[in-house]
Length: 310
Length: 300
Image 1: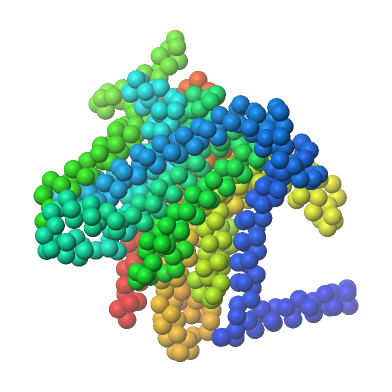
Image 2 (image 1 turned 90 degrees about the vertical axis):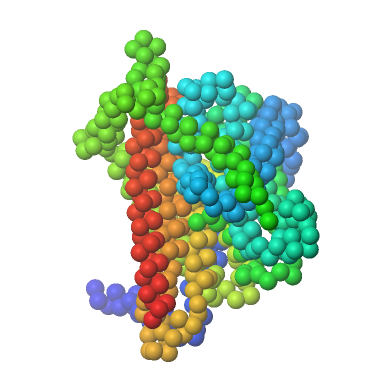
């Protein structure tokens, strides 16, 4: 028994000694951390890349690779994203909601951020509190409450596109506020005060000085709002009236529970690429505008921090 | 230089929007949950005046969630799934955040972008990716059979608790890593050098300096992912869709999208929201305490 166990025990203990050696070596590189980090990154990204790969599969399978084809994008006369009305409507609906969300939530959020950052009178505390709440409320609670308010109280609003837009704006505003307010704090008040000292009216100080300085935050928040709106499933689903008001995430959800075709992978890929393009554009604009400013971290950190609400 | 009414008037449209579409809707849930049900049409009849509220449905829901009730298992399962997912996420996420903040060197920017990337990929897309991989003839089964871990394909998507927990971790972990990274990155290296100079081993320096100083990040990230996990219903539905893995969120979803009784769904939503509020208050209390502790360390 022991003779069998011993040769197995030796390499184990030497590995243990080596790991202990790494831990004890004060200046050595923690190699197991490198391993965990890169394994995590591969784990988080490779599955998505495989899903993208299968959107280009020539057969109906999402698990067995055949050959490259754009059949599921537009080639297939019935089931491709281009020809299947369900998928095409979902794509249109997702872009419609995200676009409307950006157009409404960004101006509202920028104004709210300015107001909350500078207003210290009665009511400002409560307003601040209300603004933070949508960030920590689980989406299902928001979905239930919006559905009930539209069916019981504001009965003139029916479920469908309009209700979905209202819902998306409601959960987006706070993200805009957080991003823009962070920028406001980092700008400080000295530029506005300088403008006022040089004779600018409040209106001019606001539109010619503060607004250009806020541009990177506004662009970034527009990109973030687009991304969270395109990604949203819960609010869209609770306020959908079915049919053409179902968005891409709703279709993916419905399809994974049925027997999906690679066309679902195709529509998910289209959505992903559009979101990533918009976010990249937002990031590049942010970097272009804040170039030369004193920064606390890398541009990626700042921009990532914009999404990190806690 | 600005007029006094200027800033409140800037805030007004946004605040009004949030009052009308966030505060009032929540009140609508209360109205329905504390309301009655039409005995013939089974439609909810909300009661808007708090003095006339009917607590019958709420006590009904609490009884169902209590030991011996029909939802007791669901409630416990939700807590166990969330706790295990959180534990696993911390176990994976902390080393990743730690390495990125401390040792990544010139790779830091690249690693950070790759860690942030999943945040911009739709949750449904990432779930779809795993549904594809976990099919009977998917890559996961083929790999496990090829390496002789399994002799025949395993049914991952037919109601397996481990698949649901795995999917929750996969879905929410990016939201945990980012605040963890932020708090670890903020730690002043001189604290650590001081600890090492005073003779602390690598491990005890980590335990007595790094870990306490990253506590706010751990707590913040934990709250950021636990709150949505408690309200999740789509993840179990996608990767299992079996009643044996259903969570509280699934129960709420069922009462609105399947069942005829929105009143019970609304009462359950109230219970969930109350539970999460307690969790949130506990979080704020511990953040407060952690910051005081850190303040004391800083004073030393």
